[in-house]
Image (cartoon, rainbow, N blue to C red; front, side, top):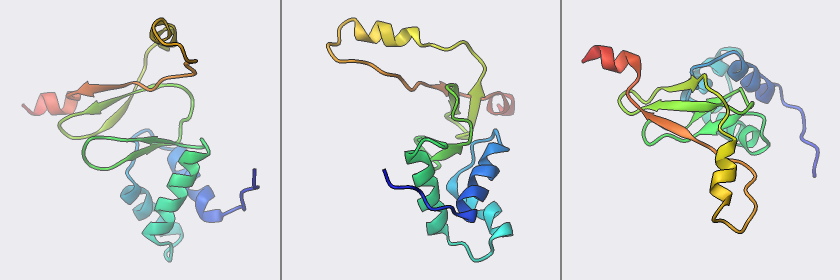
Length: 129
């Protein structure tokens, strides 16, 4: 595997995500990173987010509307996605690793992991109604 060349911009993106729990979009990352790097392009931010996601240094969370969200926390955990405001919230819950065993019962391959997202309305959206 080729060694990844160091990039101050990429490191700034990782640091920005590491300090957040709101799972920002690429546009939000771009707006904030521009404060430190005024000449950075949106394309550079997208490429770096994609690369960081591909190499497992951040998580990319695909949502049905509003674009992908990004998470600096790569430890196994679950997310709730609000179907009203599209916010992404970390869920504090026990790990569901036993689901791998349940899924493998009628599957002849080897299951190595899973991704689970929970959907519904967040507390803020419920309180608006």
